[in-house]
Amino acid sequence: MIPATFHDLQDATVFITGGGSGIGAVVTEAFIAQGAKVGFVDIMDASDTARALGERYGNEPLALQCDVTDVTALHAAMDQTVATFGPLKAVVNNAANDLRMDALTVSEAQWAEMVDVNLKHYFFSCQKAGQLMKDGGSIINFSSTSYMIASTNMAPYVSCNAGILGLTRALAREWGPKGIRVNALAPGWVLTEKQLAKWATPEALEEFRESLCLKQMLEPEDIPGTVLFLASDISKMMTAQTLVVDGGKSMLG
Image (cartoon, rainbow, N blue to C red):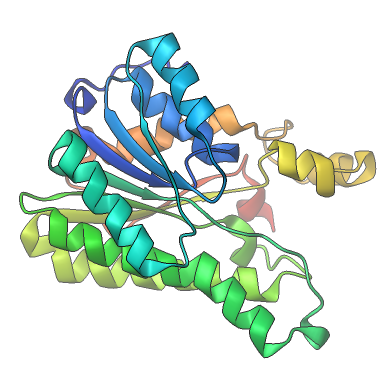
């Protein structure tokens, strides 16, 4: 799956939000293939996915059904992962909702819901990771290039993704003395099943493809290599950074 082996991820404990579907599922599999011990949460029951990974790799992740906006449940899932597998080496905050909405009609309730899933849970997952990582570790916060290219009809989502960058830098500064690295990963438009079903019309795909430096759309499999790199000690002096994986779109606008 990934044409590289990160030896220090063998038997390392990793926690992932949104790890049962979309990009998150591919990231979960990438860590499992490296021999990491993975606990992940997803709003849907992903136990079948976990069993399938266990059968394929002989290394079954701990799949926990959880709404990440429920901070108590989220923290309990992180505690359960550590109790099952041992001290945390890496946390990947990936769960998000890129709902489209007209900025003129966004209600207070909609704004709060979007912030809860796209920013609030990131902070509280990081907070718990900071408490659990007694010997240091790596936190990877998924953002997106949406705020770099000013994506339209996504103002709450775009705002949260810009906020993730501020959160990442603040925590990297605060927790650096504890040996905790905090970095962000900003993918471009990745063609997950959800994107293909909802928004990837032939016209939109062609227009977007032509705006890229590399003339091909991103697939979910294009993302986890960068996540593994940031989780591994091979990037041990990288923190407060944002790595962009978008085919060059954000460089061209």
